Length: 531
Image (cartoon, rainbow, N blue to C red; front, side, top):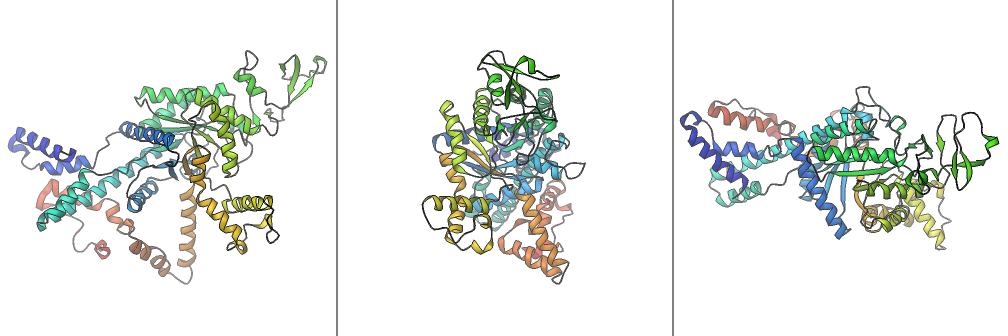
């Protein structure tokens, strides 16, 4: 017997126990409300989604073709519509998550207004967005189930037992819109205690997976901008531990931590690592510093020096009081960061790269997997990359290396529309199409995400609407470009009153007041024009 049927039976027994004072209570209405409110707390969501994510990780270990995906979002409605679209077109939410981007929280959710991705926004904006996302996803469940309940009542009233049985089966086997969220905590917004406190808020809001990066909190930069500064491993690993403690304190024992390294594009460090003996982790971090050998006589006022193999070395210090790494050490530092993170509590890796190149990613992951064979990556399919130009240049270089004639192409201008129909462009587009599949098969990428997709789609669609509406097209720009497409493509939001919960409210009114209920869905509701 399904949970729905069990609830009807249990409430019927309870109603009988309380006698006539509960005569107005309909057990099936209560069962429906319970089905529409499956998740009562954020911690229930965190546990449910952590179980999903752990299952998906195990399945990827067994078969790298079953990778996972997500899209970034900055509002609950955006996340809701993604999951509604996934269920509509793909029939299941399996292996599809949401990504909460710190960049979009900074740019779109701060009370200061638009901010760069430098951890200057309110830290609680992150946990608030997680809660908002799950509020909208729960409402999507409630709305979809409400439609099924209405259809069930109609089938029963029509005496169509076969249809009623089919709808009842859909209710009994309902798949929720609730999916894992990979949530960006930036560099922890402060010291390890601050990281722990914010992580707790995020988990309590429903986060089963927290992504943290190895930059300095007060110098944090977007992963695709210059000026990034990393911290010694001990500092970063303390924050990884802080996140794990937060999960364990709240009872989410299988919570997931993504350790992100920005070392590939970070040429600076604020601190020289503490080292107790040659070859320890601090010494390995310091070994990448750009140093010059000096004598004691050459020591200057305020100089910082390290000693290695009997030599006195002075790390090069910039006017900003930062120390720089040797050029060309980024990949080796990423490998070391990745291995140490996985050895000290992290579950997944994130290596921030400057371009989408399977070979580059695979080379680093191959080194990591020599030590940790099941190492897995979360990869940012970033809008900061010029995907068209990058892949056309990769194909150009491959063709040239194979001795093919590339004289018809200007490598620096391959983005040009004049190349769109060429063989090179078609090969590049195919490589873009299969990038996620190839990356998962050859570079250990368990999860592919796009950080800022709806930031860009909102800008593009708004531009297209505005340029027509405020010019000659007027209302036709909206009708032709938006409403007509919603109707023809079956976009649920064309009935925006229903999407906002009007019909759910009507059904509740009927539960509470029976025939006396004043409902909004009568014949004069203009939404009926879209039936």
